[in-house]
Length: 283
Image (cartoon, rainbow, N blue to C red; front, side, top):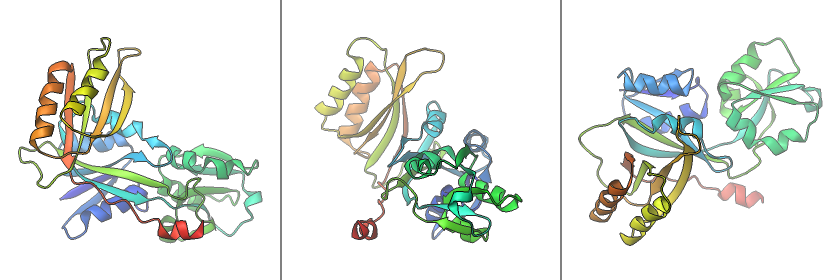
């Protein structure tokens, strides 16, 4: 079985894949972009894909979830990865001599306050955290650095200028693992993700929320996203604290009657959020 992820070895997505693959016979393959990754799943080139869908600092990762709106896929597992960003250089340097820092846009946003404290540093987006580390390693420029996990610095033999530079010490990314939609559903599930588009009439979203309330279904998250080719019209990603069961089935039946489009993206077991005991002890 082959698991795909965006990025290269040493990325946080690869860390999530290793957790997913524990105890199983899986190979892993990196892809240059999320679009290429999703297309590989659709074409049956890989069996599962890892997508970062939400971060505790920067919120929903819209560049990934937007790719899943209309696909026939199943989310089969949720994994949380603690994000410990570090500032990484090729050789030991004084931070005040750095001029440019490269990383994935999400990582740069999650370290915005820290990096803003150094006016000598310009931030530049890169395709992936670990890929940025490789670029800095291969460049003959002691004034550039990357933001990535400490494990990436160790993997590529790099220097850590400063550890734990995330603005939020509880920084964590939520990953969902998708496969192409299968007839058989998972057992013992307690969380569901879906995407809905309403007819955009007055009160249509409120009607849907009231349906879930009527059936006693708790919503964990609701994210609005623009619908392409329909300016200022929005669809909604919803996470529900409910797996398979009569209450959810009845709620979804009622919702489907008042929705223009609904796509159940997966029903799965809740992931385990990492412990923050060490962080709290240092506060």
